[in-house]
View (cartoon, rainbow, N blue to C red):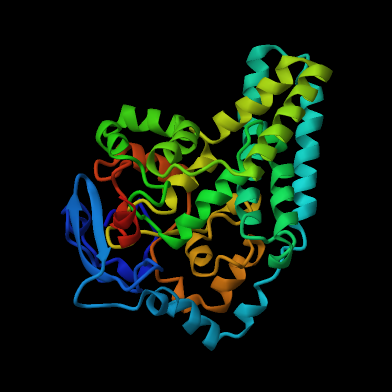
Length: 373
């Protein structure tokens, strides 16, 4: 395996051929991510339409998904009771988000007289970092980490508050679909994080993959409407009305430039931007047989520890601020796994390595999705 891609101390013996040959996988050091609905048979893994397809459906050889899916977390909790103590609200996220929102509103006042060239520069270099960080705060808040699980409504409204500098109503819709990402990871027609077949087919050269990265905000916004459309909820309508009211207020106070600064920061910061490496680093098959990876680099400091993704999927109720403690408490479950240390390197490899692209994902067929058809 190319050493440029990942740090994987325990798997250095895996050859490049293992990565390049479709359908051949190294020994998995942990159970794969699994479904959580019904009795499922993990049938096989094979290359199909460019994706690694892991079909999971009812059959004559069963795994109990509720047991297997939660096996590792239960083992870790039993061995380390301190893990359970981390399942509590983040005491700092409210104040961090408040500070980021106020900084962006101050920036709106500061950029109102800038030239368009400098406005777009600061939208990318500064506003893009803050807005991307706020989207990851919304991710954390979607797990009720701001006020705890007993105050779901407060968490929803606080996510809408964190949404204000982003310029696009996002928070409520994200939570609606993010539940499926955890419940049906890589589920075809269920997990909207999986690129469509068109994306996998078309964005397959370095230039096209670069374009795909730049257009990430559009794909993440529009893909759910095609892959897994859901009814609009009351909270989504309220999210939209609040966001429009704030956008119009900013426009009335300071003109169009601050509005463009906020929207530009969102679309540039979520596109071809160093922080956007987490979109690719989390679940793309840099090493076949491993579909979820953690990132242990410095950008975790400004992204609510979004890089600790393996730990997050094992313990989604633990807020980002405590995820490094999970690895510290139980290092034998994480330190030996493939891991990233540079999101910029992740983006570079994604663009220029032939075996990577939008198609380099595990895709599962869940019985729930079949029954819906």
